[in-house]
Length: 480
Image (cartoon, rainbow, N blue to C red; front, side):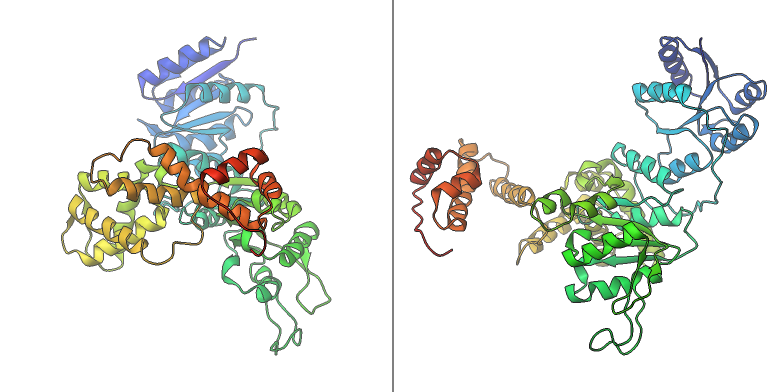
């Protein structure tokens, strides 16, 4: 039996494309250019699923969603929007939308959403409770495709207490996402407590998290309240969870399993009424293989994974982010500055190893050092070069990956040729540079045992022996 899809969008081209795609799937389609016509159809009992835009000529499509759900609780509503902000995604979900899709949309994704809506089990028309969302500030900036899936996941999570694990390089905004989950969730009136596992001495982590009783250890002259107790009723954000010691991981796992904890030196369990959001820039699965992270804890934390894209994968967001930071700086008392188009282009070309945090620091430095109201390419170029020079002085950040380190060296190598290309044969030369220390360190680690080194490297022993000879590496058995 054919189903009827109601489409409301003031863009005629979009209505035609959707109509054709859905008609080819055997559905009946009715289209409208405004919210009033859609509302008349809904009141008349027409339609099995609705596809509507947010921005309508006669009103906000999001405002229409709860009215439709009140009139026809069983009809699924798919919301489209060109606004593409996290608030739009959250509002669409909280007001009862079945699905939210950003514009420009993927046609196959939208038709698949329509099919899911038509075949889903009826839920009895339960509408999620509405919450008031502040409009004045966006917690996360960016309208890029890379950020849209993040918004959709966050929108689905804010109404739950499910544990989330946020992955992302340093500076990608993991705490911002954690705060968005809290600030728009059911626990938003209670505390948000952030703990950086990497910043707490190993011997103090358990006391820091779970608190301690008076006399529990030397110096414990009074009872101490831990982060779990301080966050009661709210959200506990465990940042850099990959740096948590194994013994603390064991206690955290017990808390997640039992829902209660006991302060250090205490005997009476306390109920752990907190939502856990964890974050890491490390590969926890690799740490599990190395025996440095508990696999059972990983699965307890990784209920809903959220992977944040690095800034280099969302360069179209850079102008908006830069403007946002400049406006923040102006609100703090400095003059408001603008970016000219060439400066924006230059910012988009930068690789941003420090991600959004690096961009923010750059904007703050420029705002302080330059009096010009308009930031041009010359200013940006000067500061990017100064930034790179400073980064090359002293030790590199400890969380730099091998790939990032190699990329940094290669870019410096190419830049040294000042627009010209290096000599031919670069591929073999680079592999030779990497291969030599790899084999040398592997032989050192296995104390010169070629059988163990070959097994470690995943090479045939004869292949290893040949490579050692080619590289003139003759390690001696013995000390490391």
